[in-house]
Image 1 (cartoon, helix red, strand yellow):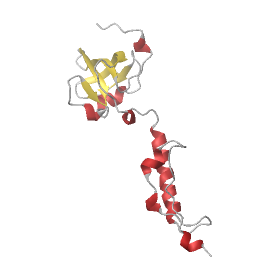
Image 2: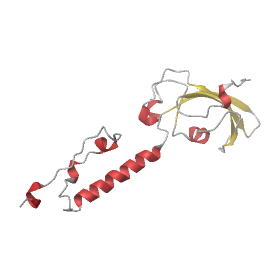
Image 3: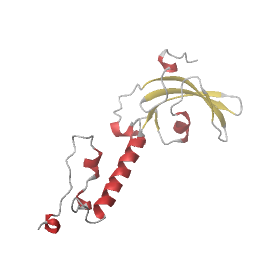
Length: 159
């Protein structure tokens, strides 16, 4: 039997954590499964890794230890998270894969698309812009670190 650590009740299942699960079978049997939760790109390099896109990983993501989670398959009826600890394996998680707020990415993509539409709408009172001059990678950078790629068309508004 696994005895939960002090941190296991505080931590939630996230990429990079080591998870100890108890699988509850329909037959009444129980089985313990241990793995590190990792991005899909890292699965297959070592045993004991579970990718984030697997149905099992999706069902436990952001859950705390001690929770009984309904998980219906032909053989399994539920999962119980016994313990969550920082990952034991030396796995370098890419920062962009362990993003806390994916809505920021979506917002940046929408703002970039709106800027492209504005730039392609023709002349404005500030001059013309080249929508092809906008670069999404530069657009994503925090304010103050990006340089503007807007080009004024000086030939159209000059006297």
